[in-house]
Image 1: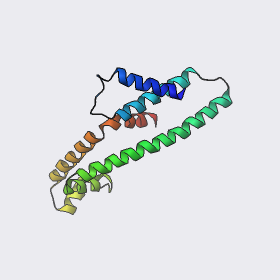
Image 2: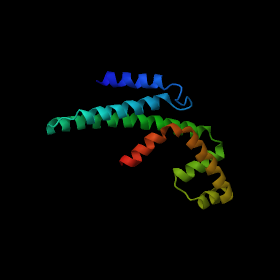
Image 3: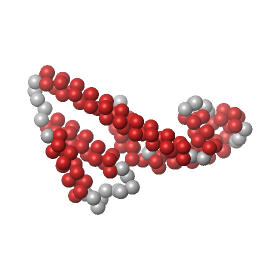
Image 4: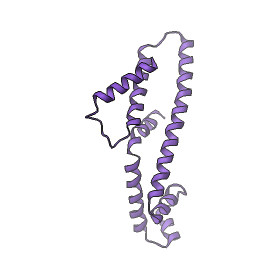
Length: 147
């Protein structure tokens, strides 16, 4: 059944190839399609035996953990790439704000710059992050809703 679901996902991609945004990750599109179709299959073919349901949940949870780890690693790599592509000062300010959890005033004082400069540099960094991580917005929203 898994092969059939994946096959259907590729067929759907092929049929909608003119509608699919090529600037976004095809891998992400396929992952989401296969994931949703798999959940639909499980929902439609639920067994009434409680023990089978527990086994299915355990198997789903284990594969979900593996998939989560893959997506998380991919996102971390993309974040690191985006950080590396930022100008030095912009990267430094972003790291101080997001990783060291400093307030804009504290960053400005440490770097001897104005708070307005910190705001401007953070705006640039966040814009770059949004642009480079746009393909993960669906995954992030799913995590926020689910947890």
